[in-house]
Image (cartoon, rainbow, N blue to C red; front, side):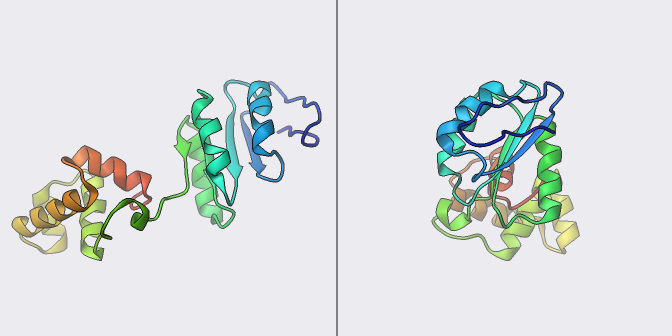
Length: 168
C-alpha cells in the first residue's frame, strides 16, 4: 500500500493499490479531491476522522464506490469489518445517535424486534423467538414505524443499518 508523502506534496499512488487507509491528519479536506483523482478507480478509501463533516460530502460526491469514514474510537473488530465492506464497494459511516434522528428513542424491546426483523424473520418467527404474541410484535413494529416516520419493513431495515442498530 502506498500513501501520500506529505499533504500538499505530489503523490505517486501504486496502480495495484486496493485500499488506502488515512487519518484526517494525513490529508485535510481541501487536498482530498486531489487524492481522489490520483487514487486508482478500483481502490477503496477508509478515513479515520473525529469530525467527518468536511470529508463526507467530498467522498459522497466523488462517485467512488467503496469508501468510509470511521471514528478514532473504532474498535479493531469494527475496523476489520469496515475494511471488508469498503473493499466490496460499500460505504461505511459512523452510526448517528438515534436521538439526532428520532424524536423519541427506541426501547430495548423495540431494538430487539428491529434486529430480528432485519434478519428477515416474520412477525410469527419474531414472536416465537421472543416468547411474545404476534399482536405484541406488531405493536412494537408499529411503534418503531411511528417513532422513525417510516411505513414499511424495507425502510426500517435501511434506517436500522444506517443508524448502527443492526449490522448486515
